[in-house]
Image 1 (cartoon, rainbow, N blue to C red):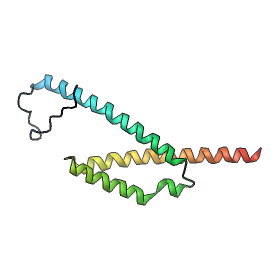
Image 2: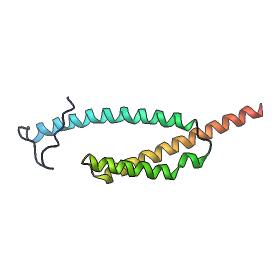
Image 3: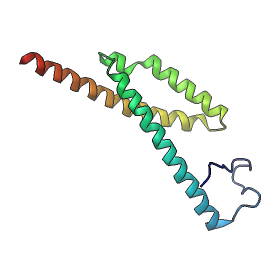
Image 4: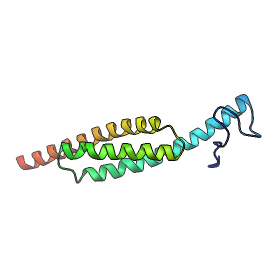
Length: 122
């Protein structure tokens, strides 16, 4: 599959020269599978950066950072609009992502504190 996209046609109408019905569905599902592969690779990279960032955070307030969350969600909404995507989809996706990464960071912070505590007891 190439990175070619079929976004030029109005929503719900097939692009000129496109296959019809089941053939086109299979083609588009292949495009989605390819996009999912790229998205997961980028999310994995983002997760690694968050993990490194967490090493520099010392408390729950710094992990939760509501001002930063709002900044990210606002930026994602703007990016979605600029790319012709419904901002609700982007913001909802990022809310879920941020919620899970916040949980991961809190777990990492707790583990780091537990290890430090265990080290002090020795």
